[in-house]
Length: 199
Image (cartoon, rainbow, N blue to C red):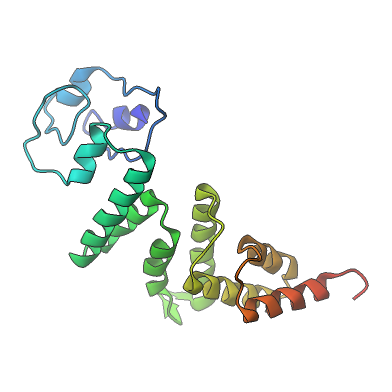
């Protein structure tokens, strides 16, 4: 975490450190890397008062008051407020930090059109599914919203229509078998029958 910060301390960029470090991890760097010609936004170094008002979520996290569960709730709350204010990009980042795949994908899926910036719907859906799977695997999430299941169903149908039955089945298996819609069960069974040896 600190290496990202130190890479930008000479004015090469801006560091935003987001994460929940292990309990025994320390934020170790030379204080001058932070204090030299900088405006502090939050600190681990005592009673320094920031020049600007920070959202309480950042302040509480930087002061190590937030536990993982509280961090998730605070990120979700901040994301909701950012969405209300029209700051979709920042809200998306907060939803990602909270591990809220459903809300993140809901925002990303707004860009799914028949064509966008030279990409067709299938390419846009593939990009969305790749990002979604990375998030799902990173969070270990096993249950998804109905809208996300519908996107996976559409993508699996496209893969199956292109002859990529095994890949389609991999995506369907990510959803698990609990509470699948009848359409998903039928699609999964059809692909399973088509991929059986001797068929």
